[in-house]
Image 1 (cartoon, rainbow, N blue to C red):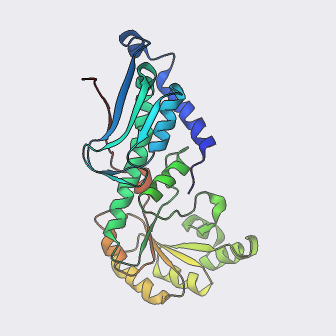
Image 2: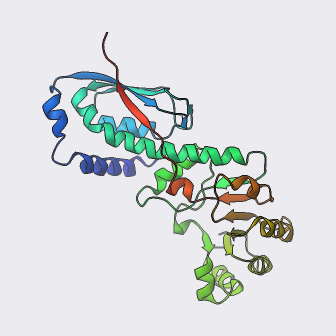
Image 3: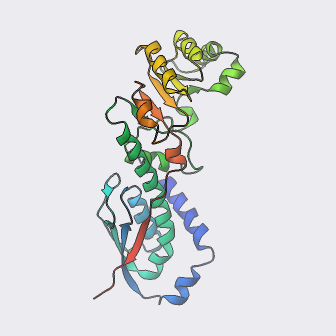
Length: 281
C-alpha cells in the first residue's frame, strides 16, 4: 500500500509534540544554537528496513534544510552496523527530532523484520502470509505498509474493505448459513465474503452455503489437513489463531492458501537503530 503523507504529517506532528513538550531542555542548555552536526542512522543488528523516508520527514520537520542521504531503502536488508542513512544540519534540531524519528522507524522496521521471518519460514509452500487489523490504534496504515515491506500481503485494511463473518456475527445471526444469507442480500454483487470457522462442521456448512473464503480459526494440524481435503480447491482457506514462527511452517505444509498472524503488527520483537554522531577529524 502507498504511504499517506497527509496522515504521516499529522502523526509526526503529534509525536513531536508528545516528546518535546515545552522544549528540549537538555539540548537547549548543552548544545550551542549554531552548532552543526552529521549523524548516521545505523542498524544495531540485522533487520529489514522500513520507515526511512518517514524518519527523514521527521528530521526535516525541525530542520527543513538538513541534508539526508539514504543508503538502505524500505524493504532492504541491513546487516549489523550497516549505515541506513546520514543526516547533516543544525545539530540542536536534529537532536530534538532524534527520538521521534527513531521510534517511528524502529516500530516499522520491527514489523517488517518479523514479517520477513514468517515469509521465509513458508517460502517452500504455496501459502501466503497476510496481515490483520490487529494494529496499534492510529498506526494501521503504517503497520500494514511495514508488513508489506517485509513481504506480507495486505488483507482487510478497514471494516469497509470486505465482509468477514466472525464467530460473534454467527452467534447473533443464528447459524453460518443465516449469516451468509444476510450478507449476500446486503453487500454489493462482487464483494467477497469470508467466514470464520471454529469447527470442521462450520467449515462444511460455509462451503455448502457458498462462502467465497474460509478463515480456519485455532484449528490443529489434523483439522487443517481435513479442511483442505474437504474444500478440495473450491474455496481459498486461511489459517489463523495462535500462529507463531515456531508453528507457521507446519501450518503452511497442511496445504492452506493463506496464513495470518496478528502478532506481526501487534507485538513484533523490537529492533534497535542508533543515531551516531560523525566527528570531524
